Length: 128
Image 1 (cartoon, helix red, strand yellow):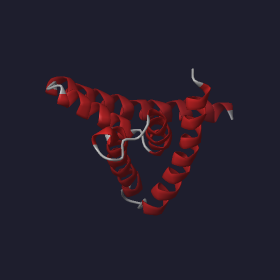
Image 2 (tube, one colour):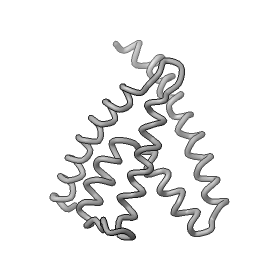
Image 3 (cartoon, one colour):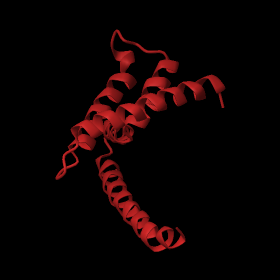
């Protein structure tokens, strides 16, 4: 592992987590997770800008892409990475693979949250 890149990603992650906390908390409403939705959409857009920077005058170095894309956007929202991967699959004209990935990811992640909730109430509450 490249220590310099690891530190760049870590520093970016610190910044991204604080941004997510601020933006998500500011925009969330009691009846709908609008802050999370906004973070996921904004993060997906920004990751697209960052990762495709070589197509524009921006042309970021690999180090900047790691800091901004993996670090900041990775902590800001994992939805951005998911969206980027879906687009990459679709650009290879693999719609079935992309659709499967979307459905499996959403289903399993929601299931995992539910299982975490069950674990919390069944195990952790009894321990504490």
